[in-house]
Structure formats: C-alpha cells, structure tokens
Image 1: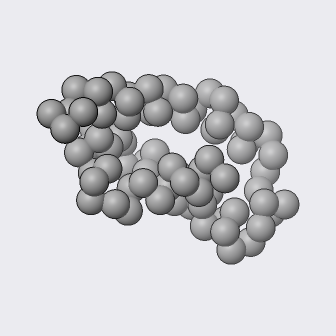
Image 2: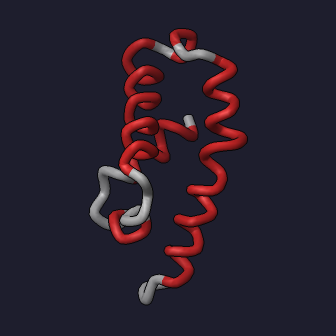
Length: 75
C-alpha cells in the first residue's frame, strides 16, 4: 500500500514541488511497482526486491520529501 500511495503523490499538482528533485528513475520505479501491485496483484511482486525498496531505497526519498514540505512556504 505504501508504494501505491507514494506513486499516487506524483500524480498530484500539490505534491509536485516536493518531488521536483526526485530522480526520474525513482519516479518510474514507483509507478512500475504501483502498476504491478494494482494490476497483477501483490503476489506477482518479487518479495525481496519489494522489501529492499521499502526499507532501504524509499526512506531517503521520503525524508527528502518531508524536508521539502517543511521548507515549503505553505507549511
């Protein structure tokens, strides 16, 4: 569910300023994982890769998005 929600944020105008510095490959990877989870089902995902994404690769980006949100004038 975290991947689906994170990917959905890239589709909103409100979130755009916070993800401006997110590498394109990260955006693509999130969308791809969201599509696999949404359309093929969670069992179609590689559990080891999914775990590494959630615990290693995604957290630094989440921290960056939080910092961007905190630095935002609307915060």
